[in-house]
Length: 159
Image 1 (cartoon, helix red, strand yellow):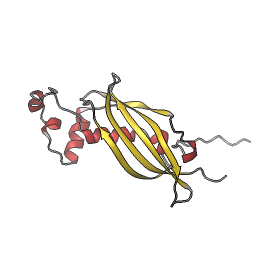
Image 2: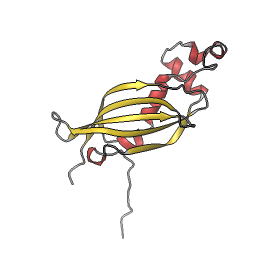
Image 3: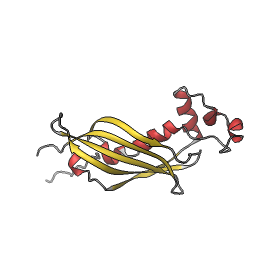
Image 4: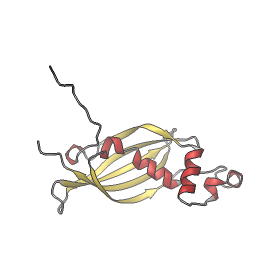
C-alpha cells in the first residue's frame, strides 16, 4: 500500500529565492468601497478623500481614493502565499514606499516581486536576510504602489 503524496503550501526558503527573478502573485484583488470604508474607519482615519463621496467629487481626482495603507497592506499580503508563508522569521523593515497613481473603488491590484538582494545573517545562524521590491499595478498595468521590504528568512531545514 503506497502512501498518499502530501503537498503543503508554503513560501520559499532563503536558498530558493533568486535575486533578479520576477515573482508574479495571483490572483489579483479588486478593491471595493466596503474595503476602503471599513479599513479607513477601523484605523481611525477621518480623511474625507476616503469617506466623503460628495466632497471627493470636487477634488482633483473627482472621486474617493483607496486608502494607501490598505493598498500597501494588500501589496505585501499578495506575496505571502508564494514567498513567505511559513518561511519568514520576521519583517525587518520597509523603505522607498510610493504611490505614483491612485487606486479607486473597483480597480484590481496585481502585485509582483523582485528579490533584489540576499545574504546570510551574521547574528542568526540558520537564517538569511532578503530584500524584496514589491510593485503593484492596476488592471491597466499602471504602477500604483511600490515598496522595498527587508525580511529575515529561514534556511532550508537539514534533511
